[in-house]
Image (tube, rainbow, N blue to C red; front, top):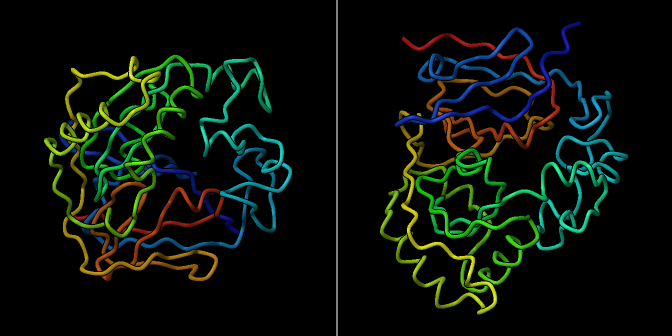
Length: 269
């Protein structure tokens, strides 16, 4: 029985346009060649923990078995709440992992995903993090030597800014509006608490991102493979970590990490 390929987030690179690649057992699939054609994702029912690689019957958290949710550094609380990170103190679930991933330069940024939000990412993850969130424009406002400090800036700015992406707003045609990001940077300088202002940058320029979407459906419906194991039709594009079909069905590939699927497609003409 073919158990298919366990899904992982789509890889992305950008020049003037974002280019996506799905990672399949048979090799990487360049999505540029299939957008516009018939595309089907069929869940086989098999599940694999993304952290330890073991087959599981259910997930706890995103693509994780229960022991990994409890113990793996990828599932530590500071992933979602960077202000709690203790990597700079040599602490954490796995201190070596923390040193490699969190005791490194981090970036605080503003991004437009259908509304302006604040976010944090490791500097080496720029612009990948922005693409994963479906940002049409983004602006670096601070660089700091470790994750917890970036988190403190983010927490203080959450008084005036959102820190989450509205996925329905993101899956629409959004004006990049770089000037809005510049204006918000000025507002941030006036709002951020005094002891953190020394980390703010003023000379960075906004980055604009373009996504391979032929047309945005007027309404979208998020598909969960656990309930709808087959999603297919004409693939209209990809934005963030979502695949977008002509009938409005959308699939968040990253949220289905560890779900085994088979992919069928007819290349676009």
